[in-house]
Image (cartoon, rainbow over all chains, first blue to last red; front, side, top):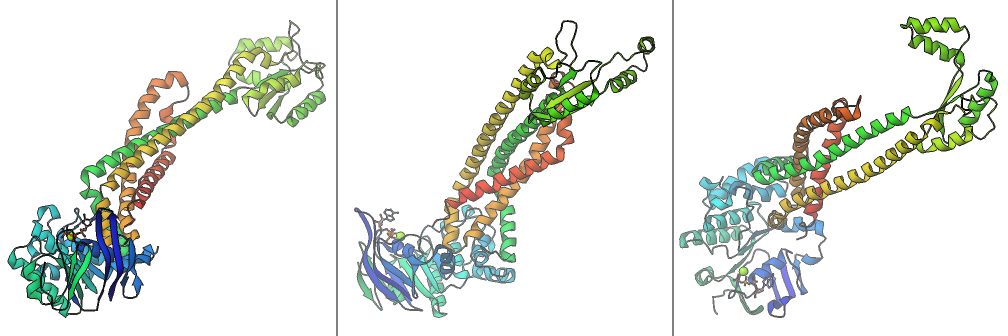
Length: 226
Length: 312
Ligand SMILES: Nc1ncnc2c1ncn2[C@@H]1O[C@H](COP(=O)(O)OP(=O)(O)OP(=O)(O)O)[C@@H](O)[C@H]1O
Ligand SMILES: [Mg+2]
């Protein structure tokens, strides 16, 4: 479903983010991308969203070369991918509710669907009482949960989550991980970038390990080894 | 790109909401656009007012040629036809001696002394004349040359000093000077308005651009979440329309006392013309010009500014 084909991303000679990365993700897979800070995890996800171009190599989503898609067709691709960014990237002038609803509005969903779906995911991430808060009125963990809610509300084919639990307490962390497992069980492909050892070890799913921009391990029931 | 009804409604909704949430930035943008269209409005009203004054002054300039009392009417009408053939001439008006007398009588109908003296004279003391208007004030010189060419000496009247009765020569200095002032003030007025309008445009655009620059991260997030360009751009354009409309209301309200004041201060200078009255009598046109330029400024600036950030 997703295929990285000899992808390199070289920002400058001193910062080579990815080097000759190739791997394949099947539909409905749950793949964790692990690696030390600076290993290239965020860059990998960025390339899949076509937020940036690879220096060489190709990224395929189904049979489409992501970086050859004409500009006006990119939104349609991005709507099939729900993204949780490491730095949340919420819209600062919109409330939690509106941030989540935005993903649906952008997709042209009906107003009734928005009115029923948004409260549902708010419930799921435990933020019903903060629905009308603006991002600057939320804690880091709450912002992160809004970001997750926004990523999953439109029931995308793929969810890519970059360090989605970095600011959460253990209880919330497990809630989110179980949530990701659940949507994966319901048929959504999940790419999770993390360096949380406990999560990886308890997930018992596929793990792709990056080291200095290279894939050094790719195991079906991986453990966190560094 | 086609936008469906639901998206259009959302664009309107977010344009309104963003306008109010942007508080200070919205107010600043409205103020700058107000200032710009205030300048545009002032320049348009000012220059078209001056231009109206100039035109009416130009209307007042003419050459009149007075004929001998023995001059044959046929010959005068022939000269009239010849003058009308000249490319510089816009109109020629013939007044016969009898008509001149009738006009004179009418004008002095309340003045028994004048009427009495006319009666005593018995004969008509007035002469036939042609009143010639040029298309352009600078062309009177050549029209006058045509008249003085000598061909028409047999019918043109002569005063006590033997000078032909052509008023141009008598007023030559004033006419030349006036026509010079008129043409230069038109040119200067036009370039000043152009420069002012350009400055206004640039200031307004920079402000809008700054406001949108502040939203550039937001714009890229919207794109990554899968919003189309039209859906991202739309609310900014709606905001632009709102900026323009509110700025127009502001500006109209500010121009009113401004022209009232200017009108009072300059009434001595322009005499029968008053810029305030001119403003009032054209208020609807002015309002729509302001509205058009305000809305165009608001939306076009936003459109151009946002283009740069729709690139992720
Ligand atoms: N825009 C950029 N310009 C230059 N270098 C960059 C840029 N973005 C990332 N890099 C470099 O690319 C490398 C990989 O960065 P990346 O963000 O992918 O790491 P990461 O694995 O996500 O790390 P972390 O776990 O800290 O989030 C780093 O060395 C970083 O310095
Ligand atoms: Mg990262």
